[in-house]
Length: 326
Image (cartoon, rainbow, N blue to C red):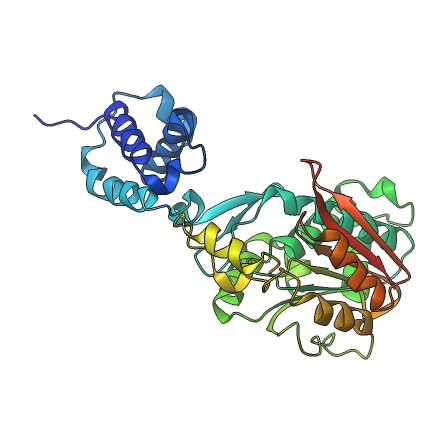
């Protein structure tokens, strides 16, 4: 009788991954290969990784063809997130495919900073109209909105004026709107799926995904003449030559979301000008940038008229987020 146990599947996959020049070019080692194997096995069996590790003799033969196809694609460099269709970000699991960038831990720094500003707006009972431009999967805007809503709902003591769930929802009904915008129709379809699965109903009805080009006028707040209080952006900022190098590893992330031109700054002047025009007085813009040109990017925002421009570091200590105050 033929068997293809989880133990055998792990070894088969790890050996395949370690023979791939796409994966091993950047220090990919056996522990990482075994971890990837476990994630793919767990995906095929719809089990947790802990279950996989505890059942190494389980027969995977009925799933062998599906598993081997995934191993082949991973060996060609395709990231695990695309293979299993999800990526965790800021405590939530986002649907992803090859139309969007895979959410990165570095970007959580931007969400944390924007969330602090959003919380201050709520504490003052001030309106919060948000635009997330270059939204991709929606990970920034959706995380910001959902985290703000849940933190207020779960900790009403943060604002003494909040006495009930009704009052929290009433604030969002009257004082909140989120626009998620991207130039890519494929990205917007991914974003809409994440809206539906991750936003509380009170926020879903106050969120809109729209097609927009950051080089043109930003989309307006629906049914309103007011400007935005907060804009977030993770624009394409990788220099073209570096983009080429990154994509050589088979990662298949969309070039449109990576390539920021020769120096990686091609879109920043338009982003700066349109953000300045689209913000209310004292509104804020939070932008992700590359550690290799954050200082140059900051000067672009200063030149656009922002009264205060600060650079924040990510958890690795690299310049990552530019905070601009109108």
